[in-house]
Length: 455
Image 1: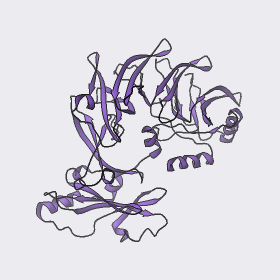
Image 2: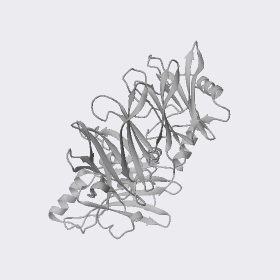
Image 3: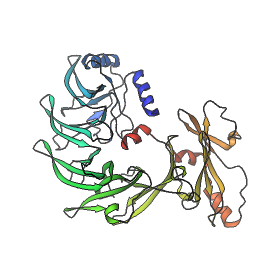
Image 4: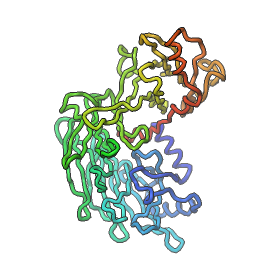
């Protein structure tokens, strides 16, 4: 895949110095300082790598990770360096410590796997010494392997090994206690997912809750369901390509399910395709994503519909509140957030040829819902072609938004006078966007992040 090629190119360039996964407390893990002798660190890592091993990147939902990461593994305020590696059939990490001006190998943790999955340092019992969770990926038809380690003296000791498809760490009850939620494929004959919650007790993670749900495991996420209520969001796949999201919350001393689609039969969170739950507007509250078809796309095949993503927040009872709409083109690696002033007044169409989609057009639909008056187009211009030709009539009518390895993406503004009058004309004029507004709505999608969340 394209994103793997990009990662390989970065690895060849040298040491990757980036941030850590959001679930890892920032005071425990941070990128190495830029003034560190990188060549010395690289040489030390090579010295301790197993024969045939090479540096690698952990997978997972982190937007940016690296082959080298500074970690305070024992909570003493001194940073060690974790080095991620892989070889055929094996993945692992090294813990390097600086002693008397030289790098020493403090620990090596390895295991079977095709790739490193999530690697998370998390303090479960508030003793200031973080436990280490390493996800090792296997064949996609099987569960992956999650190994949990605790620091015993100067080295790690394995305390749990758990099969998983997805896991998340957080405070699920709002009591300040960190727990681990694991979603895994069940051994049942029909597609079933098993959700298990773990707490740290007497230096081991023990099960505190287990539930089974119909559907394939897509993602589990611990996060805030509203301002005051944490919850566990389970994204589950059903059928050939559809999905639904279930919310599990702890209230009044007991666990309560919301939106168990296959049990309730209300279809409130049913979606045409999987769409991982996330905090889409960065307000600290997790939203549930679903798709809706735009006006005029009713007769198109499923794969040809320009689906609109609609993001909902739990209303605190049994319903959902829409908070955002966006259009995402994963092939072109971008998302366009629909302005609030467009909601309920627009539709989307795609222009394609034998080579694929060439542009996405946003239209004002009028009060009668039948009009098609251009609001904006996002044009895909191949990098090997004159970018000012064809779709792009003049510099004053378009602005560059971004690019990927295939195309340069431009916003093209309408130039013709609309065939509108009265209130519709005023409404249309109020919906037109400035260059700055368009740029604010345009977001780049981290495909490596997204694909790993859905793997």
